[in-house]
Image (cartoon, rainbow, N blue to C red):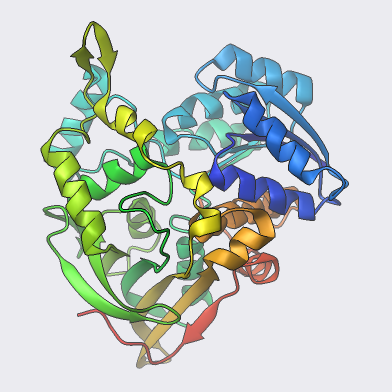
Length: 419
């Protein structure tokens, strides 16, 4: 019997809410809180008569610390699942500490304003010292480790698919398949087609900031920076077929490199079609991907936030998206003195996801792990306090839950390698 607050009511949140309500013997009381409470009310109405979970809704501004603490004191959650924007991660973590409950998110902190002077000074220092140029990084949330440890609480960071499941796959591979892991390639393929000339499959603002930034990989203890979309490979994905994929920087590289220093090289690839890239390059060239506010007829607007309002809402893509996703990890390493290859991945069908929970597979592959991560904490499978990423916990019960609740693994011992 657990009381849980979910902050945010976009595509990922809707999946997590549906999945929590399927486990109504665990998630007995659920509060959905969002800036737009009507979205919460709509989801509650969808689930009426389909679950024993007691659902309440609440309007909340996740930037308002006092309002968050007031809500937590009123509802008394055991865990808060932050499934909104990563801009609010730190303030929600602060509120969880103030009240005294566990915390979970699906993406690491990044600032909304990347030109804010204090943050920018720290960022420039990190770039100079580490050649690490991503706007998102775990250092801010890792600074909360001791605070959560002292209160006996868990802050589970980045518990989606990538990050999240990919890190569990690393822990699983090391526990069951390797004595030593030498290389890791994380491959994220979305083979879905939604029919629009251009749309993003998750929050456009976060997606486009990530994709248009410099790429990076980790090799022999150092970050190697490369221009955005400058490294391209082709790969034949099970269930999808041959796709172009591009090297990006992604947050789990940072935590995996820290927790598995034996790994000599870690790379992350994501698939993109030519139409997507042409549209993105055009938007970037005319300044619509900028995060810096401009003056428009006396009103300050942020171009990328304006663009977000023009693009299709990712939560509405479910009915029209067909095809599959394929996300996983390819390893090389050593077991019992012999060199070995291993590939562990999941395939998820967009239409099957939509028919189950009303959302497409990109939201599904993030929302299901978020529910499973909360389940690990509420059931006591993961009980070590602190601000931690997924690979720091025992992967077995988590992967068993994924297998059971919609994201089963597939394994290969002779995969095609990425050159």
